Length: 306
Image (cartoon, rainbow, N blue to C red; front, top):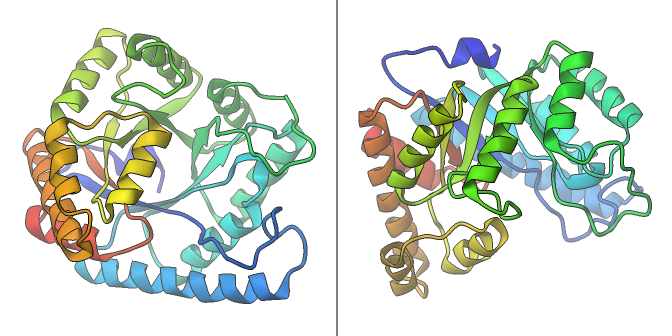
């Protein structure tokens, strides 16, 4: 099912989740591009653990869409391929949406990859610029910005293309207003749905919607939610993403930083409050950053969705 069909106004918002290809201790710096028996065995085990988590989540509510992340420069392409292909075989989701980053990738590589996704039966893709990888010998400069990737995919395929939005602005943008102009360019080139970075204050999301409307961006905007599971993980993601949680939010999680059980409970409560408010305000979807675990997302859905 394509994104435009998925995000038609319904009685309840569409639930989607993001997962990532598991990392392995044994893998080489170039991912699995070099044969490594230990890494492949470990990867298979971790993939099965991931599929088990998906099955647990499906027992609560089968998400309509699953998105799968992709490493910059194609370093995790093989791992993403494995995940996407296996999900399509094992589960009957309405849609599976691989991510794709263009930084350091040449056009021929991207076109080949798009053709591979077609053979899997993929109909949607999330187009991103991505971060420049550290462990790569040759970095091609065919693309500098995500809108160029969107334009290229649009010219080569009939995929529906999702793009990323940042309610607090991209970490590299000079301002939120400048970032929205870049987002509008991605939409104008063919982006049909916007999935946002996670945030912790819904007011920021609503103000973002107003800014998008003011700038003529009128495609569906799907809010991203992150049920926090560890304080160190939260602080690492805050640093990498550039988001600025309020002192109230940070203090709540800092209070429980030494208790795994309590911080997971706090993360579920925070995400449940956000989800309930977003549902009441008529969002078309809820996009959960699962961290490859079913428990917290399942609890949030039980608290808010049924």
